[in-house]
Length: 324
Image (cartoon, rainbow, N blue to C red; front, side, top):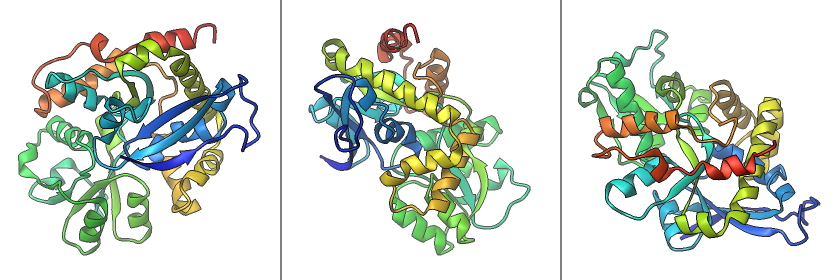
């Protein structure tokens, strides 16, 4: 099951489609988040419509729901982490293939209850950290960062079962020392003087293949006429983001996030732009793939290595960007 997030109609917004009859594209994302702004901009900025697509974007109703949406035929393409395909492959499940990059970095941040101007990762030892529970990747990245700094994650009291609202309420009540989350949660807590930003997990983790476009082998084989304009439209949006001012980006995504104030939205966009969160090109790299794979192996999430060629298709980007 999915819930509607955005519906884009080229006629309604006055865009002239590249073909007489736009192709309907069904996209599904795991969360309603500014983290996925390149996809939102591709829709609301008219970049997909300019390539002859009429897209809808829905949000999965539960963690990992993007996988079900693809396997059950409820979506053509999922905005998803490669971790989902690693997980399926490691368990001998069906293959889901990634073909275009969206986020090149972790999009989460670490807040402390008390100001820590001299923050060090060792400050987490013996403390309670409220982790994001909606997906495993942020937690696995946190483990990797701690190990790089010589800290055993077992020495930290991680709470990983709370929903976002529960975690925020717990943090506001003073029952935890740290909270890891993304915008607008972190920015609202900082604004209210409840939390203090001590670390960007994107900077701490480093570049990796965090989020990309994922589909089934069947769609990849038989619906290339749908996927090629998606890649071209995403690339158009990525070029626009690269050249746009932060205020322009925040304005374009505003209709998708009416619940977020202009100040918080601007601050979130600024953080993501400054740490190069959003991919500037749709090509997925072997380096980003392997960086993620090392984190998953070290964290015990997967038990064996998987080949880049088995989970990533580079031919779509090569074909879509030919001559551009």
